[in-house]
Image (cartoon, rainbow, N blue to C red):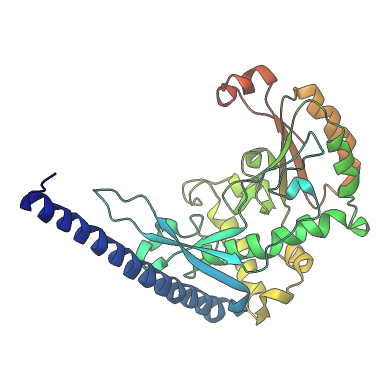
Length: 321
């Protein structure tokens, strides 16, 4: 079969394009790895300069994740994943991403074991701590660092099991294990920090939650987003005061941090196929095994028929605590 010159030229052209694209991706990857380290170092430096917080950067890794939505109209921004080199292990299967094969109940958490790192100077304030609990640059990074790598692991692995503080999560696990109608999941989503009533937080499940009804009471002169500006300043000042002296992130006393900042974690479990009566029964059983003055456990669910038909989002959430 005779091959024409045009076909040969075309094949060479395609080959050249593929090689060029491969080289471009290699160079781009190296540039992004370099940029990741640069941004990471910059954010760690800001935490030290603005919040007196010392981070052992050798305990974490940072890799390129992807771009935010940009499209044809707006420029996207690069994001980088920051993870602990030694992955956090939780005592309970209900705080683990791994399926427990021998049980009919298990939990897959949407709460990540990493945070996204990006250059605040590039993305401006749109990705910054939206509530402006803290006004200093990098405050969003600070709050995510605290929640993901410090406070949440303490709550899940220590506080919930601390009988001296009125908690015994092992007993709660037994109650969850006895639920035979479906799976039980731990559930959480942003915002990282929140303030107000538990009723208004049952869809978020904030670790850094302040139970204060006045946070949501504001007039036009005392309002920032959905929060009272006066209360934001009050709790923002507490955070700033806590970090007014040098602190090593790895040695922070997280219970002291909790009390100082008036934090009351909201921990949500979604109980599949549970009606309200079942949720209330389970709530009454578990309530004696945790200190509700220090945290709140919320049980949420949808009826089986609505969940299986994919119409659960159309039905109002059933939540008890």
